[in-house]
Length: 272
Image (cartoon, rainbow, N blue to C red; front, side, top):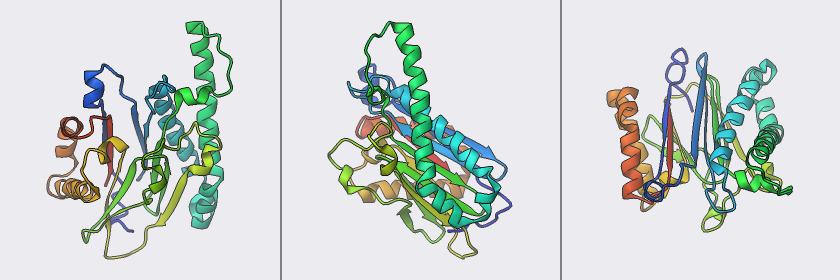
């Protein structure tokens, strides 16, 4: 994977929309999105709260998830020793980074739940309240030299190359089909986080776009081919019109996709 000009750095855009079915049922959007640009690098995170009766505060849980992901990856980025050595980054992300993210999410959720208990007079005493805030998480740290991908639960990360190749940065977990997704609230949740680190070398087949989305986007297409075709369409729009056209229309397009598709909340992020 490479970018054409390291001096340009990365650009990012994205949007979360309330799903069509959630609009009809007056249900709050469970998705969250957050990103931060640092010099020529981008930290980007999206999350999807479970939204079930067991997870009444998952909309807050997803917001905490993207906050924690961006903050934790920013600390990683600022660690010069890690940045200089790709093998150190891989080693750190395989265990320590995963544990840090889950630990930090749980810490913030604990504080949020204590505040809620006092405010609402909740007397329930349980050590399994994390489920009430349950959320998936996808996060990316894209620098001029490497990209770190991180995923827990469903959703997708697509990478698109100059030669037209479209592929998954982290392969879809077939075990998640038809069952409850893995989550930040899962027991030993850090063990289910998948990471990949790619070095950006000098190569003719440049990486042109990264697209990350919650499962409401993928599930709005009839099959994998339709989903990847949509990613190709976004890449064509970027090449022809730049980011502004997508920024100006993304909310409308995603709302239409939800309405014509599965009806779920949708979050889409693009890094280019």
